[in-house]
Length: 338
Image 1 (spheres, rainbow, N blue to C red):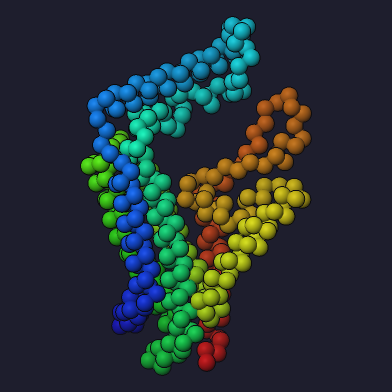
Image 2: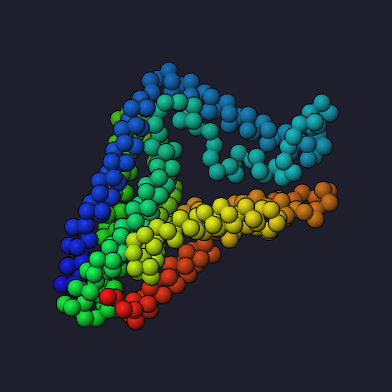
């Protein structure tokens, strides 16, 4: 317990960590101020006009769906047979749509918490992921480079215990900070929606969906924090983690993707870490691959899209983080620290 307390004090005393917390608060403040300045409370005329436009859009969707069914049954008038309809009319069935037009869609300049909360939450998660990676890398990297770990081992001469305490303290501190930041962040925009915009439809489905995204985001923040910690431990310096991240982005996410496009590789996106991150956060990610329908004669409908779901993507992220973390512990146990 004394070791964890000491590590927590060391972590909170680091100037880089303090600077990152200040930048985090500054980014939130700028986002909230920009949103507040660009929004206003709609008046009755604006609301009535928006409701009418949304109702008209829903009616148009229903008409298109009925015309699609009529084309399938052969009862569509000849002059309308040239119009485009999908092969499967259920694709445009209003009942099956994920989101129907609502009044908030036709209120430009009005912030709607129900509509914007999830995109804003993705922004928060992205910033926290960057925060966790940089703090995790600098926390252990600076200690290894400056000899702080050696001094700590003179007090507690158990290498794996010390490294475990450092990693556990890091993950616990990042998780607590992320949860506090999330509450403050979402509460701020909820207040903006109540006072200078529209709250929107905040039903059980909305909060369940938002909580699911937030939970997956917190897992991703912890994984990236551990990843930065592990790479910096292996490289004995903060710059090792930064260099590894930059090299991966340039050589594989950009260069590798370009090479796979040149050679017409099958499903290249499933080999990219960014694709699995997106699939984990959203629950499912769809990607286009023309090779899927390469052998199709054109007589049958072929969908050139394939999906990555959250389950396999989580396994990829866990395997990568777990493997590097295990390697970091193995190397730290045997390596000369002087």
